[in-house]
Length: 257
Ligand code: HEC
Ligand code: HEC
Image (tube, rainbow, N blue to C red; front, top):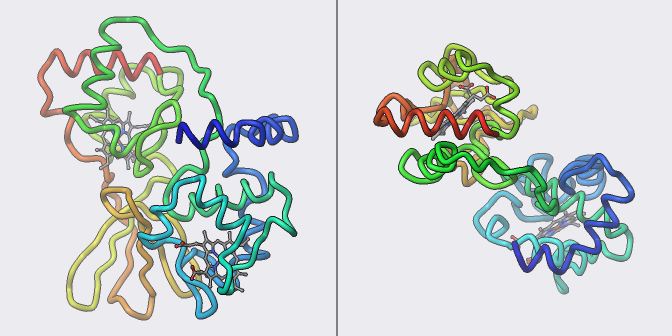
């Protein structure tokens, strides 16, 4: 990512000048461009089509941001993947690449520099260690542009929730489920049940983010027994099992965001 930032900084700056409201290139017109030019070969959800491969498989997810942008710009010679650099502007390529990352369950390409002030409070700093370490919150939540995407980004949490609401969301996550982070439960034909963050729906398929957040899995509606909404939060009961000092520090950290 460091390398990417270095190489693409000029482009990122160009992007920001064009549309000052964007904090990452995944926003913008990525989806429109994707639907217009890419979906015919890669599928509306990136699930793949006869003329193109899936963009949500391991290979495509493993591409660095840098390589992803390069493939779209230069194409792959000898395959149906043409060089879009000749027909799309640089900013459009970044938008569409950002949208591919979103289809893969990411938050777009991170081109922002992250200029949010950090807390110096020793409790908040200790809490940050718990968040990133033993409590494992970072695997599902991001702040300042890094972390997982199964749960909401926690930037600005301190201004969004008061102390009581914060405690409630930690102790009893299912009491209020943040909109857009609902779960679906899929029962497969062999009886296996999978649940995960609901990401996308089409006429034929539903997409669910895997529990580790790493991929979006597509389930074809006519190939599973049932697909239901879940009223349970995907957030596990980690907070209640932490020691009192860790809990207190963690709350101080969350309130500093
Ligand atoms: C005419 C069909 C077609 C269109 C349209 C198309 N692609 Fe592709 N794309 C392919 C094929 C085929 C491959 C596989 C190339 C190979 O074998 O390496 C591919 C590969 C890719 C890869 C690399 C995936 C990997 O796992 O390495 C990315 C990323 C990609 N396409 C993105 C896009 C985007 C974004 C668009 C729209 C701007 C687009 N493609 C439009 C056919 C297409
Ligand atoms: C397995 C994934 C996962 C882990 C691990 C996880 N969470 Fe969550 N969290 C979620 C999901 C999904 C939601 C949104 C659904 C909901 O509201 O319960 C959420 C919601 C929240 C909210 C409410 C956010 C808001 O905007 O209202 C807070 C605060 C929170 N989590 C904090 C934490 C903390 C602190 C930890 C570590 C102790 C943690 N989470 C661990 C998945 C997770």
